[in-house]
Length: 167
Image 1 (spheres, rainbow, N blue to C red):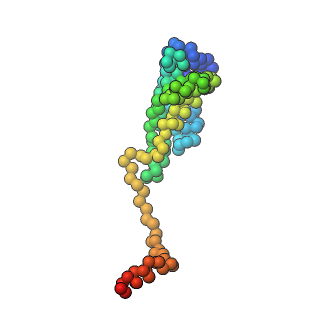
Image 2: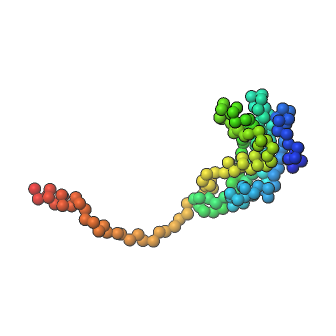
Image 3: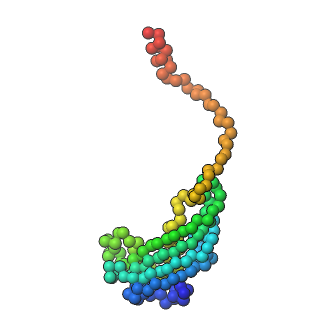
């Protein structure tokens, strides 16, 4: 259904009528997400909810889920990471955004963008900073023997210690 709406998407009218659009994006369409991970395991599915923020500004609520393959930073093994994203995007002019600091504000020109970009951005922001598979064990490795390096410089306080002992 999202594909049909891409060419006729009118965010303002959708927001005024409080439309809710369910969607499924094929994993092949999530190119940036695929580049940021080891692969996309599932299609992304979710819903776009349009409404008016403060009764005036068009707003899109993006709720999406998918799963990707990541490399665990603890065990160095690939694992499947489920992603859940929930974002609110408000469309307003820059001069009107001072009081909207708690919201992600987009310019009115961005209303014409492909909604798939909003969805993929939400998933990219849901990626963990440090991917760690739950229950993973750290990689065990051995470091070769560390050679003891003797200090070439004598300790400057050694002479002081010798002087104190003479007294």
